[in-house]
Length: 355
Image 1 (tube, one colour):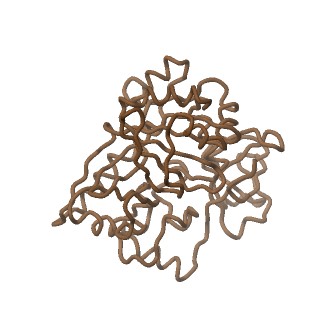
Image 2 (tube, rainbow, N blue to C red):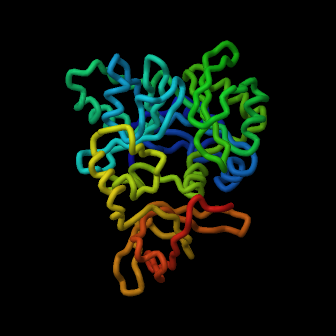
């Protein structure tokens, strides 16, 4: 385990520790893991409103006259046609079509802002920089100047309104510029039809005051343990846990990361071959488990043959009682077989799961 004293802490970590949060490493950054009962925090972000530190997200600024054309040839989605202040989700692949990282890309005018987990920033910058040859492109780690706060739950919009943040843009992955107590703040909504989630981008100096205001307006402080419970419920794979360098894009089920009409990019030939031939043998799925298992866990059929893998597990409260749910991969032909992982009965299930 990495010593907390040796890793970067989020801009809010010290303040949150002073409020009773247990601070642990998440995505390469020290942040609040829990404030109390993670199940209660999970209930807030799914049934009421929760607020959480997103300081574990990193930012990479891509500038230069060739930025749109160049980045469009690097990643899996359409960058060159992004409207101002619009974003999309992307994979970065190698020549064999294997996933090297994931990120959101936002057209911020003279800059394309890449939003990813802090633990990916150095690797993505090194990999991308390798492909800047004669292009007018510069990469800069912008993480220190921008931190983020998440506000999530059915009452999220009401809480934002109560603190004086009323973004005019309602569509997902569109960034709104607003003022809050004289400070420049950007607000965007994540792409989920089922769960209302806002991200607020702001300076580290402004973050403590906004955190306090959101709490006063009724948002419950929430840690990463509850966020992991929600991530499994929502069926969102995490790079480094559910998405590894062995995975091909279509295996992850993240169709919104792929554009098949934009032209060539690194690994595009493999992605197109899979699309045209339909030869996908395994795919991302949810799992219902009879009990928790240690992950990663092999999924085996009744003959003891390995047919899949569980990569994430969470036990969480739902309307039908406490359930253990997982994410991972299963071979196409094995979905209807009797399956076990670590001696525990498991069953593939569609994601997102229902509360």
